[in-house]
Structures are given as C-alpha cells and as structure tokens.
Amino acid sequence: MTAVTDNPFDRLDAETRRVDAFLSGLSPDEWRVESRCPGWDRKAMLAHLSGIEDYIRAGLDGTVDAYANQAGQGVGYEQLNEFLIRRHAETPTDELLRRWREQVAESHPRLRERGVDAVIDTQAGEYPLGRQTWFFACEYAIHADDIAVPVTEAERDDRLAWRLEFARDALAEYGKGVTVEPSGDGYEVSFGDEKARLSTADLVEATSGRLDEDRLPERLRRRLVVLA
Image 1 (cartoon, rainbow, N blue to C red):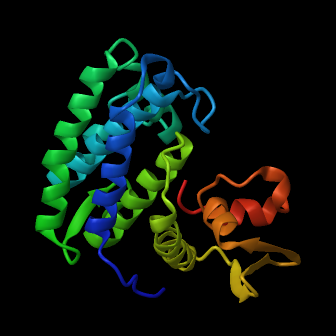
Image 2: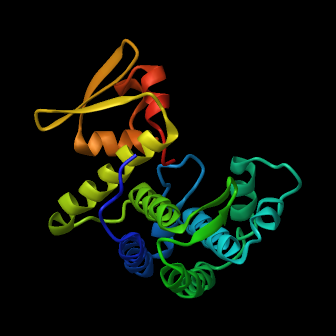
Image 3: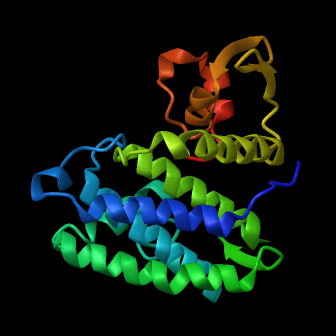
C-alpha cells in the first residue's frame, strides 16, 4: 500500500461544494430525477448524504455503534441506508438541504482539525482519519456522478487522477488480488485468468461499482469494487 500524495480534506470540501452548488439550483421536477442508484432520486441521494454526515459525526464522537443500530440491532448496511433515507421522505427539500449544510459545516472542519495522523471510529473499529477522509471524498465524488453533477473540463483530469490514485491504493489495502498495470492510455486489469483493458475513467467507475456489468467478467468486476 502506498501513500496518497494529496490533501483529503481539500478533496472532500471540493466535492461537497460541487454538490451544494448543483443542488441549490434544482427545480422541484429536477429533484425527482432518478439517480444511478435504483430507487433513489436526487432528494433521496441528499438524504443519503445527510446520513453520511451523521456517520462522520458519529466517528468523530466515538458513537458509531449507536449510529449503526438506529434501524435495529444487527441491521445491515443497505437496510440502514434505506432507513436513513425513509426518515426524510416527508422532509421538504429546502429543509433537508439546510440540515445537510449545517452538518457539513460542523463535521468537516472537525476532520481537518483532528488531522491526517489522528484516528476515527468506524464500523470496522478505529482507523486512520486521513485515509477515512479519502473514503468520504470518494463517496461524495461517486454520488455526485450518480446525480449528474457537472464536471468542467478544467477539473476533469485532476479529479480523475486523485480518484484513480486512491482507488488503486484501496485495492492494495484490501488485498483484492487484482493486478492493475498501465497499458497505453489506459490500464490492463486482471484476476486469475480474467483480464480486461479499461480507460482511466472506466477503471474509476469499476472501483466505484458503477461500470456496466457486461463490461467485465463477473469475478473481476466484483473484485475491483472497493469504493461503493
């Protein structure tokens, strides 16, 4: 596993600002547009982002167990996500947006103040805060793409670069057994006898669990998912 050579707090804040600017301009009909997550429109995605902020705060406060048990003892990750979204089903979008902004304003400076060398409580136990912030930044970037937040040409290459760097780092950390080698202007990925060639953008999508299923052999596709 290699060190990621960038500032996770800056990346998280940049993704948050992009999402905020986009959501701030949505019409009522645009809030109801479906995301890439089945069954989630843009309002549901904002409710999910609010849930992420709840998780960040719980990690900082050391109360992740209480966070995880909101929907019942031993409830899985997907069921918890659905519970956190359903609780805001009747919340007006402007109120939900205001609440999310307040959460971000409270928790993100606390992450930065603690610093990359601190630890944070997670569902897997204590974990380096800097690395966990990279995961938060990646999750925000993934969900920004899920709801079609525009990416300018000026930021596209740099954004892809840091996301790819951390995705490859996460693959190494999790010991997925996947080989990723540069090949021309893309990458060759392999697991056992399964191989494929992907562009940088497609590799980022694959590690995020967003690449179309028919683009990769099944075992290789599942092995590449580390950030969903």
